[in-house]
View 1: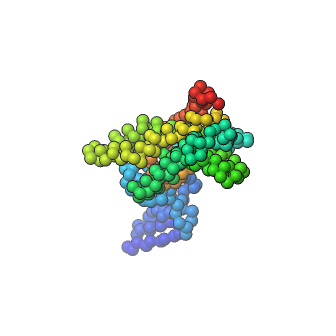
View 2: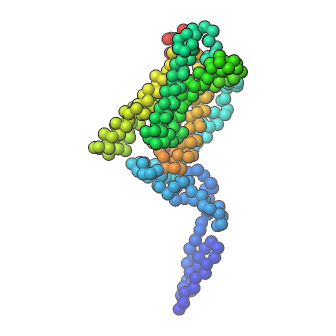
View 3: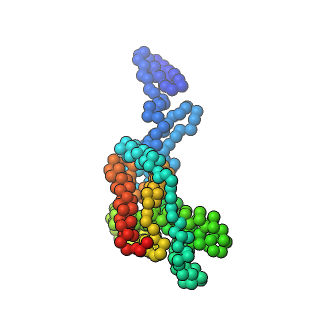
Length: 339
């Protein structure tokens, strides 16, 4: 007897000679809807004629260039933890609900110019000269990264890179405010630049503390013992980690952020506006990390993995750390600095 195959739009029916038939589904439809945490092999069949959606940009099993093969597969692909998703919804909503009205930042780069001596370095006050040095040094490190590593791509995608750019930008903005007020006699522009520089003071020092402590005390040991094989590769990793570039962004970042923020004549107390800006920066980076880098297969910070509920503890731990730093840095300023 002959078998005949009948093909329909969404199903295939095989009819055998004995009259029995078996029905096999050729294509199914997702009942979950378009969610941002599908497995690498999952897709949303929006329509038979449309391109299928995939969460991962590359077919790399969630490990960009093989860099993260040391992580278990379930941490690289798969559904996000619902507890993680809920925690991010709460965090994102809180940023909107608890925004201070209005946001206020004292323009300290201009407020104390009259009381500062103008002959320390090239006719500039000492704090302004320090800001110029910090800005130029920050740019030197960026240029060095381009020349030695061949790319500055790590700066926009890593939290450490964001921290370094904030330190450099804070110093550059407050120096530019001084230049606009004195050389250009443009006080309107100077005020805007000084306010912008003042707005990122707290997040610059807080991020520097977070990067310095978490990298050196948590992430460095994990990567060294879990990711890098023993032998020559570990020795190369240590040489790289304590080279010029990594030493600057993970160790020298702290003293560079400290000057003119927690020391000197331009120190000011931090307000809830400063704390809100710090949380906003965390929110913006989380968007990059979870919605871009996760899809690329880059998992720089496994303690914030979205596929485990334990990451909720890490996330709110970091948010609590920022509030703790907000209180303690203000306490430090009140005890050590004459304002």
